[in-house]
Image (cartoon, rainbow, N blue to C red; front, side, top):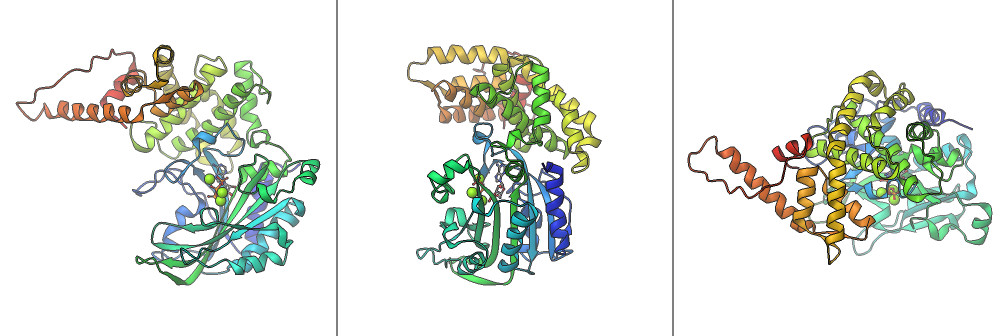
Length: 476
Ligand code: ATP
Ligand code: MG
Ligand code: MG
Ligand code: MG
């Protein structure tokens, strides 16, 4: 069986042989871009090449990119651990052509890599191409269709809509159709009984998308017209964890060697087993094995947990993971920090920035866990009280705010616990409370500079611990 390290290496070697320059992953944390907190696709670091603002060092590039999809356009957080193939942090393998090769080469090479190098069975593969849209004046991707026809049966080429098969950066600017490759991982009997064709893009847990090839060939103008770009580009992305799952013939990404080391460590620490039978416990194992990667790589790339912006995203993920081991693995002390040595070693040669800062990252994670564990139990009790008291199955905004402000519960954690108990959260009410607090803290700052500010001090929540003090001084 091929290891994940070998699989990653083969991808890069394959494209190196096709004269691609192999570059390093950009940091997972994005600095200096008001539109993006974290890298969510391989192409982010190359945006300026597509826009024509910068010239690339090489017209052909390939890499493995650390990505995070927990906010903004791509937010997969709620799927993570519940399904077995959406992660918060994942590696996106990619190859690019900046004004060089186009559809013929990209399609032929992706087929060659999957079927000849990785030796995937051809009759498990399906591809999608853009069907076109008259309403939006977008043509069907006949070119991609004709390229695919050279290597795959026509009835395995599926027409896809704009949502799945057309990529655009924004309302204007570079855009174009894409073609995606899906693998049917069901058993032979299941495949015989029901063909996989209709299951593509249908969220079937065993029929999964692995690779997207985007062809940037148009420029969308302000008036909505499409104009052909003078130079056309290829931008591809393949999730390494999904590819490894398929090649190691597992039915879950978490059963691949990318995750089994961490899961074994969690088993050892908690004395619990990842059985694939007890749903709640298993989700907890998967969430922890997933979230620790997002936390570790973000901190290693310079994003400390905090109460605002990207830092709060990391803090939210960490608290979410803590609550999973606390409630479902019955583990009441810091755990995540103990996983760092396994993770650091596993990625030592691919992303050395983690291993080289391991002591620091471990310390930050441990302190964050300790901080939240100080208020978590009281917060959960409070939550139980609230849930037993509600008459309309809604946690009101004031209560959600108290959980946030006093016990350090991010709103999505309250929402998650609520939904596990069939309760909703009054999010509007929560926002209102949050805004009021912001106004209060602005007034509190104003007291230093003005003489006649009278504070309306109606907030009388008790101090519970270190984190609530922090939550009070700044609000996300
Ligand atoms: P999906 O439909 O499964 O959510 P996507 O269409 O949003 O995937 P793309 O934006 O096309 O994904 O990204 C390219 C590739 O990156 C996907 O084909 C998939 O292999 C991988 N990928 C995307 N999102 C995730 C994720 N959250 N976790 C792991 N791999 C992912
Ligand atoms: Mg997605
Ligand atoms: Mg998709
Ligand atoms: Mg896709």
